[in-house]
Length: 102
Image 1 (cartoon, one colour):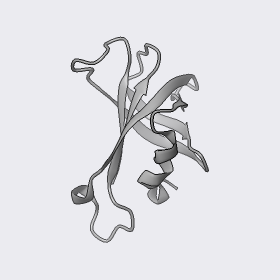
Image 2 (cartoon, rainbow, N blue to C red):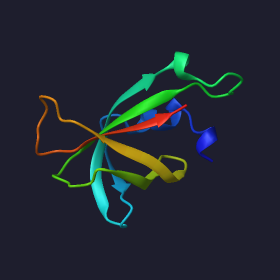
Image 3 (tube, rainbow, N blue to C red):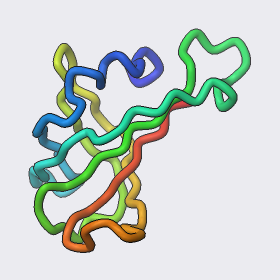
C-alpha cells in the first residue's frame, strides 16, 4: 500500500487538523505543514516520485519515531515510519516530524 501513496494523498490535509496514531495506540493531534516533492530522490523505474511530508504536533509530545497509523481522506496508512526533527527555532513545546517516501 505505501508504494501507491503519492503527494496528492496528503494535499487535502495541508494545514488542517488530523490525527497521527502512535505505536502505543495513542492519538496525537497534528497538522500537515508542508509537502516537498523530491524528484532527484526517486528510485529509478519507480512509478511514484519521491516526496516528504512535514507534520507538526498540536500538543506537547515525547514521541521520537516509529511505525504509526495516519488516516488520509480516502485511505489509512498503516505502519508508516515517522521520525522527529529538531525544533531548531520553532516552538519547543511541539513536536516536528517527517515522513519520507522514495
